[in-house]
Length: 83
Image (cartoon, rainbow, N blue to C red; front, top):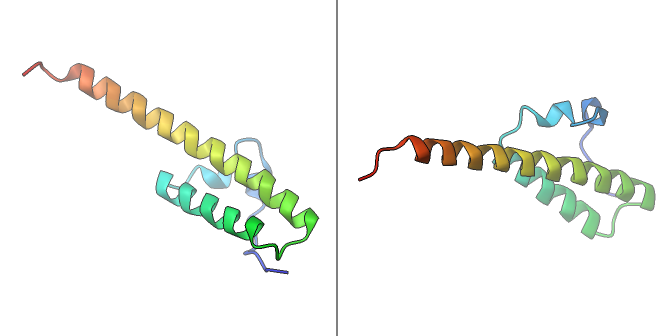
């Protein structure tokens, strides 16, 4: 089985507080890492379920971050004077 880095455990809280400090790019990298681990076929069913659960939290955090950035960009565009 593939060893995965130890988790801080703080991602077990709703929203995954360890994810709050990551950039969007870091969240995407983590999601890719989790996907690679799950698709490797080298993890057991229980670990795969844990990885899938974490991947869901990472995906939600990335999607929320992207929504906030899109809203901010829209707000900034609205404030810009017309050319």
